[in-house]
Image 1 (cartoon, rainbow over the protein chains, first blue to last red):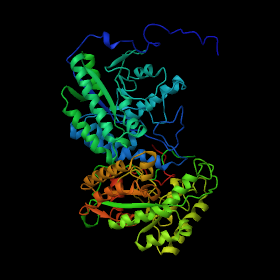
Image 2: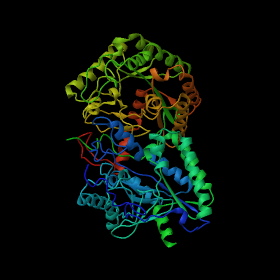
Image 3: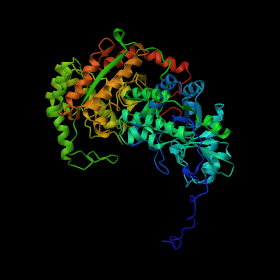
Image 4: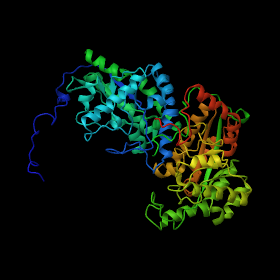
Length: 300
Length: 317
């Protein structure tokens, strides 16, 4: 053990970092009645047959020895088939979502990207691929290179996304500084509050919107093996609870994820339709996109 | 140098495809694939994968699978008879030698056989091309000799492959591969020779996955099957879909599961006006004859062809 181990240099009021300011919800002014903004995240991911696994294997990455055609093709199913079911369900409910896209998928899935843009959904940057995870072991130059490469791939398609989600929602300590350096305004990696949080970065604020891992379909339906009805009930209950809280205390935001190769499977679509219809019916709830939520928030 | 993308098929979005109509104007082609397997009691070691998770011998693992062979297949056969369904058997070819009585019962019912390798405990990893060829030639000739059938389908044993597998089965005039899970409709595979279709099999509604890794109860599995069927039938109106139920008698024919499973079959077979009940080779053959060219043309027209063939074309994401 080093001699400094028993030292606590950051033991102080507030958090042990300066990334954002400590703010206790009880001490905030009441701002009700407000409404709930919901954002739906539909990630489009490329899973190479040859993951490096650095610094950890992405949760959706290959499992069996090379060539793992099984996991390659089941992930690809989402981008070919499942995502269209999700698009249909969103359309039926009159909702717009945000689609964070791995830069490496833009060429492969061009017709899909066009379809998403035409329908008025937001397209966000999601790094290069699921095998380009941002982490603190990367040099600053390498991490900046991942972001530049992502932006170049988007620029080739005439896209300039302002919203970012990191592959596997993983970051280094410097990621937020790099994101604002490259012009990003909104980030979907963090979930420390029920309202947007303006994060401190070297290049001005980065808006973080709460993207609930506890409502993530991969987490609930796959990792935790919950049923479609259990998943659906929790999504609707979350929206109901927050709509009530917004009424009493002021605006609220919640985000949840629909993974095309999970939520887009045939036997799950009934639950997705039911969920979106139930959320759509709630009073004081608006399903929106991260960019719009951010700009509304900043106007207040 | 390994490939990041196998390039075995082109990206082809589910929307706006040429319309498929199955024989008789049906919307959904339904097939059922009982896996009739032999797991060796003393499998040899493989550098990439240990056959039995606990090491050899695995008493529960082995005897549970043997229960499938001794007791389970017959229960499933009688159940499928009741609903007038023919199985497409995913066969470990060594079972022809070990348990010819089961094969005879399948032949009696006019079931189809396709290859699932020699044993489920012999993996393709690390095989040379010559070794893989010998496996395929052995599979074709053994089934032909014992049943008179020329097998047309392939599912790699324990889903293990080499970069050559898909090209080789196409070369040996197989019509369909169950090895890829990218779609609910068939699609031509990009092989050096032959005319090989990727036929929707399934992991998501495969009983090994649902009862096993997903821990579903018997009634939940039946519900998943019904929901899966309903959605694919609805979509089949726009363009014909394929649904397969892959089964393993050592799981589905357990006494607590087979009646709940029957509820799903009842639901599915009640839709005979809209559903083509077929075998793997019947669906793949019909697709090859009627829709292969249209699919290839549509992929070309939409500028989605990346060229080349599997594990040899340009390496793109």
